[in-house]
Amino acid sequence: MPELPDVEVLKGRLERTSLGRRISRVEVRDGRVVGEVSARGLREALEGRSLRRVHRHGKNLFAGVEGGGWVLMHFGMAGGLSHLPGTEEEPPHVRLLLGFDGGDRLAFTDRRALGRVHPIRDPESFVREKGLGPDALRVDYPSFRERLGGRRGAVKSVLMNQGVVAGLGNIYSDEVLFRARLHPRTGADRLGEEDIRRLFEATGGVLQTAIDRGADPEALPGSFLLPRRREGARCPRGNGEIRRLRIAGRTAYYCPACQPGRRES
Image 1 (cartoon, rainbow, N blue to C red):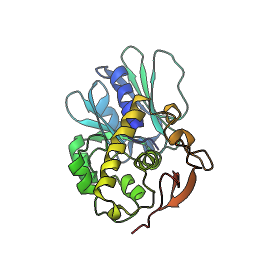
Image 2: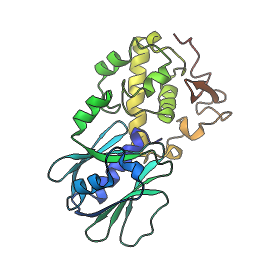
Image 3: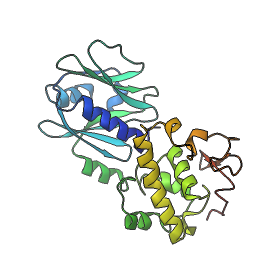
C-alpha cells in the first residue's frame, strides 16, 4: 500500500507535470475508481479546467481545481500516477485518464482497483470527517506525545492507526520501530518519555529519508531495515537475524537483539 513517502513522491510528480494544464478530457476506465460519484460527475468537475495546487495529508493526495473545489486521490493498495507525454504507450491497469491540451495525459493506475478519485469540498473538511490524525511528517512533538501516550495496544498497531497520526503503514512502521529500538508488540501505554521522543525523531527521520530517496526501500541507506525486510536476513547493525511476527493480522519484521521484547498491555 502506498504510504506517506510514496504519496509525497506522487505529489511532486503531479506538481511537475500537470499543474496549470487545461484538462480537455476525462476518461473513467473503471467506474469503481470514482466511488459514490458518477463518471459524469467527475467529468463535469474537471473537464475544461486545470489543477491549480496540490496538498497531501497522510496517504491522501488533494488537487485544487480551477474555479473552486478539490479532487481527492487515494491510492488504495497499489495505486499510482503516470505522466504520459505525447503518444507514449499507456502502462497496465489504467483506471482513470486525464487528457491535457497538447496531448499529454495523466494516468491513475491501480492493479488492485481499490483506489479512489472523486471531488470533495476541501481537504480540511475531509480530514475532519474521516477522523484523521495530524500528518506524520508535520506533527510536532507535543501533539505526537499527547496522541500516542497512554494508548492501549501494540505500538506498531498504534503507529498505523490513521486516527493517531496519518501516513504510516505496515512497511514504514517497521523501519520507525527499528530506528527507535522498540519491539513491535510493546504496549503503547508502557512507553516512557524517552521512548516516545525516540519514536517521534525516528518517524520524521525515516519519512524524510524515504522521500529523499524517491520512496524506494531498496535505495535507503544500508543502516536501514527495509532493504533487508525479510525473515533470516542479517540485522543492519550486525546484531543477529531479522525475525517476523503477526500483530493484529499484519506482518512485522524486527531484530530481537536491537528491539528486545516487552509485554503488550
